[in-house]
Image (cartoon, rainbow, N blue to C red; front, side, top):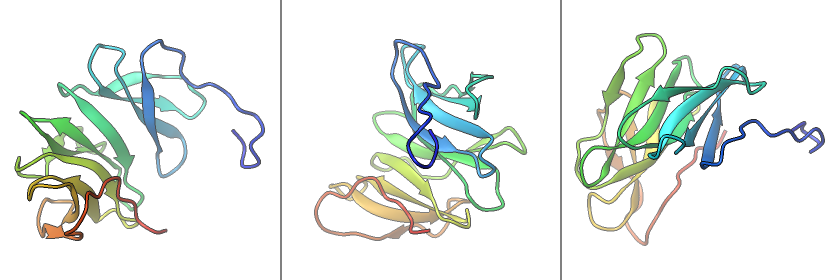
Length: 156
């Protein structure tokens, strides 16, 4: 849709769920989660809805977030056993890197505005809390310590 709410147009037309869209930094593409294969996977399409294809085929992959900085990457949560881990897909190399360590369930990644850090939810210490980590998996930091905290986001 346009900024003013006009021009609403459906981008996908599949009986499966299509959720969690994220724009590419140049606004030419959209990545999203769909379970059209029976399990949630990450898909990508052009901004006009053409060129839809599966990008990430992990057993279960959810909540893509496109980096906003100089890195052309998508972070997402992927099932890696009983829980999830945060992985990063690089468009430059075509490779995926796991950046969390399999402790607890790590979900809902959100890139920092410069693309150098990721905030995410983890149950590694019991209840869901917010953590940050560098995009290379180093410098893990716990941000919240009370309550159940989900769906982090960065101010722009």
